[in-house]
Image 1 (cartoon, one colour):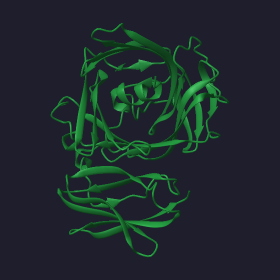
Image 2 (image 1 turned 90 degrees about the horizontal axis):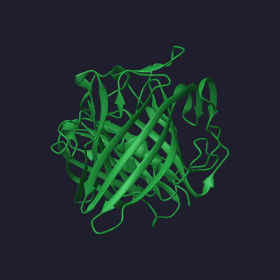
Image 3 (image 1 turned 90 degrees about the vertical axis):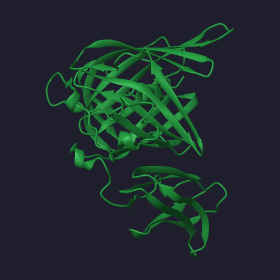
Length: 355
């Protein structure tokens, strides 16, 4: 049902970089960054009534795509993290590329695990953390998402199986690397490539008839940036050039480094980054980093300096952290979030809540 999530998350093609400076772009393992701390913010819209007004372009080169005129109803941040500092490292020990995913519409934090090798990129599964609850979904009988090198006009198939409680899922995705050109999003204008996909998903439950659905999708990726735009059709769509989509996601902002040296695997110091979005309506993401294990306090104050909510008060592990502040019950106004630690004193950011 959710083609963008299956392509950007479960399948594992996240932050994919390609070399598009030649007539026929290719993808190699060296084009995929893996520096913890890099992050990308996405805006998206999910519409049961359908999304129109986009231009898919055409196969081949010379395309000019523009996705700057859409209004979002969801926001998400994807951050590369050190695998050893992630909460499901023991479950996914082969996972050497991990992204932490925080959505302003959901209370949980997701972790997507992949294995990056010189010959291939393979999705291993994902985990979800929500309060004290932790759940992991391991892909079994999975095949690589990408076999390197990938060249223009290549076609390939990837599949994966997973079981959660008494439900078994089987996914098969056909990919075609069919176009390249220039893409403009609210986050900037970039040279990029396009992947067309067709996904078929089976659900099997004991004692019940199997159910299935299929859909088409398109994903655009840029050199040095990653995923730019993802577009997914409705279930049952049989036209690869569908004129009405169910979901659309685009790059809004990013902070990426091309330096993948090992010494950058851990944060060099304490940091509290500006919330996203800001101004915001009800929910916003807060991201911070800590270079060592220890106690961290993260508190919200109103414009008069009155403490209104405690977001974090206790020990955290070294690494990059993200959470969502739900301000549904708070009035419109100016707020401040302060990070306090014995090593750093405090750091403060200003938030604007508009309802």
